[in-house]
Image (cartoon, rainbow, N blue to C red):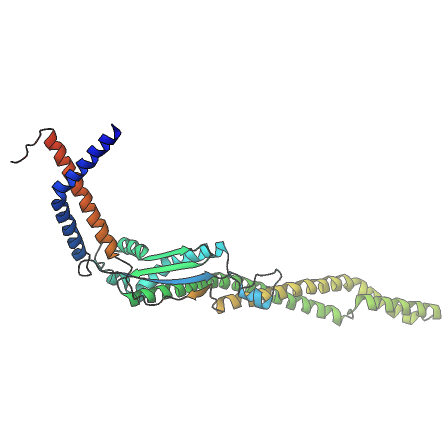
Length: 340
């Protein structure tokens, strides 16, 4: 019984194909020819992909790496980690990079966006996101792909976007470094002014005869003992006067000398911070290592013509087959009568 059903089904399929093969062939050939014609460059503008591959670098301060610092800084020649890659992706996708590329290459006109269009910025942003794609590879690199109808422009855009990412990041760091430099410079000037005032006060005390409180005190006490043992009351009185001056000015001398040491150390730290911040905002540092620069593509990436022809032809054949099956079902139910 099962064999009979299989034979019946097979014979039904053969009968169906023999009855409608001409129509299916006509539909398939028509769809194939039509799709081949309407996917030609005259109807669909071909686009090309230019790709640049770069590794993120560490975000270490070049000043600390070169000048050294109080805390160890990572080597700025090393590759960056996943966090550095994600940061670089954010900068590549930022509005600052997008707007500069638009200004440099007049992309709105290139994308044929009308100047008086109310939503020209929205349209441009959407088209830019469609044509510029950046992703992180499994190996930690950044793959930036630019798609455009002009292959030379696609390559230039890809390379320039990578360079602009460095520019934008350096500008961000330079702005912060300038603030740090100004703060360090203000502290440096304050410490220098304080040192000048303390040195002036210390000069007054030293002119009074106080210049080494510990050494002078020990020497004068020894001399006082000698004068008293020899009965030199006049010399002993003179030494007592000098000891009184040491007692009066000694506290100020100790305080001022300690203050000079502390403020001098703070001044040196502020000066180092100035040098670090100045180095950070004056030097341009790349934050990526370009592995494969973008080159002018010689093969279009869109559309894939053979795939479109295959899909359109297959879809047309499937829809025709479904239409024929539906037609046969309608005839069997008597809704329509077969033409004689």
